[in-house]
Length: 161
Image 1 (cartoon, rainbow, N blue to C red):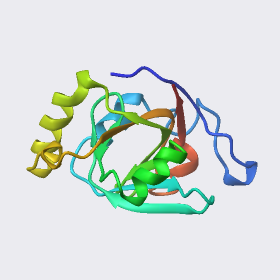
Image 2: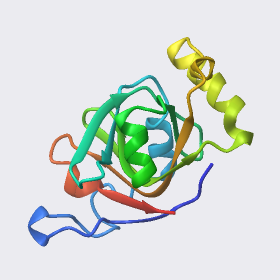
Image 3: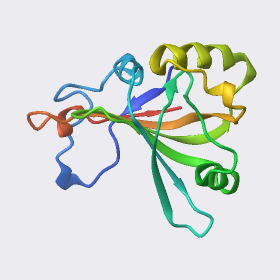
């Protein structure tokens, strides 16, 4: 499992974010890792070559080192990634949010079987059978918070890699 450093995110004072040792304290990375696993619709935000945002729902899996997914090589997502590999991706989780910012790379060969196993277990299909590229979002920063009963200012955590 990854071992990032944690801190509070840099936000305006009006957000009411409490110091690291107040509220719920910083969330542990294991909290985020657990919430990145499971069957979700993931939302992938990439940037079109002209700078406009592109947001699409996808199926993806957390493989312990990043978020892995496959997409058609001629898809808008793939075209965007070829021009700018930096993205944000988030699983639909409601009040327990985890937001991953990072760079998309080709999935390392040593993680391919882990990806296929996790994808088959989660979505009951092998996306590599389509012959399309498989990518991984390598996290640079991850944000997490619990937004119930005004919990955001008491739990907001940023992990840096």
